Amino acid sequence: MTEETETRADGVNGIRDVVSIRLPAASAYLSVLRTATAGLAARLDFTLDEIEDLRIAVDEACAMLLGQAVPGTDLVAEFELSGQEMQVRVEVSTVGSTAPKRDDFAWMVLTALADDVDAVTDSSDRMAIVLRKRRGVARPL
Image (cartoon, rainbow, N blue to C red; front, side, top):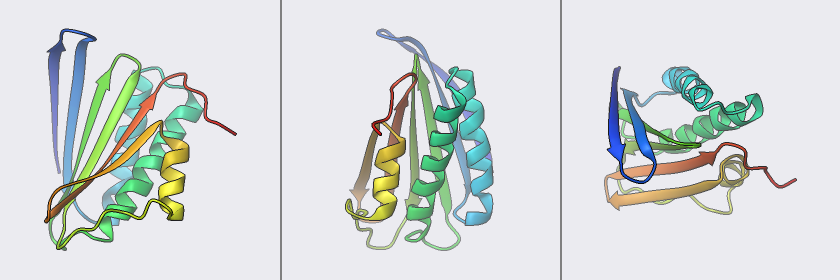
């Protein structure tokens, strides 16, 4: 498992932190990401409910990706913290990746828990899910 932290200057929002975590693409390691998610969200003063929403959303995104991950490869998670927002990108190596179905229950869970969700397939052998959560944004009931 590798963890990198980087602070970048951003002319619009001031300082922004980026934390990258690389770990085996196996469900046994998802607790590490859930814990990291909670700690980083707490750093941005997210409420307990917002933190729990993020933990569940990251867990669900990883579960969706692990089903398509090449065995023995890594899952990479990048957390970008800026102002009142956290963006999380989780990515795996795949064989012939197909984007997640947007009418699937798991996708509906993601969109209910995060403010923005997108699936990214920049190449035929990589897939990522990107989540954004802003502090203080109320979820629809």
